[in-house]
Length: 168
Image (cartoon, rainbow, N blue to C red; front, side):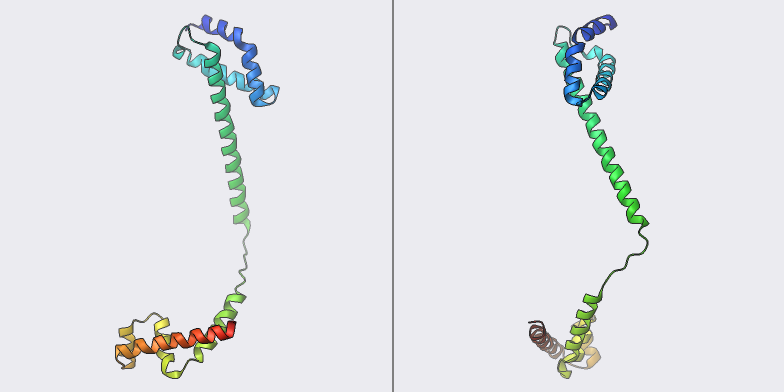
């Protein structure tokens, strides 16, 4: 398509294209900007227009694409602005105080319950809770591994009973 043909077809369909731009953009100034961007893209790609096909439909497709691309760009920009603002506000908070009183209280209560486990089961259970393996505990206490396993099992049972009676 030559420059003259494009200008003639564009001038012929300008009014309907502008109305479509107004419907999409919702205000006159944005519609004019949208139509200008559309005409620039269409003019730059005029060699892709198939002769004897519907020029108005081709222009409407470009108009919609430009509108959607602009809308997505604005949404992305707004999200980026929100993320930047959120990040800045998060970074400017310098002093955060974490209230861990409840977990400290519960830890203290559980520690008291563990201290009340029968002495025979207490030491193997504490070593196990610190991450030692059954074999390491057996070697350290000079007990058979089966004895260590059963003492830890009974310590867990006693602790479970104490927790149930204490918290229920």
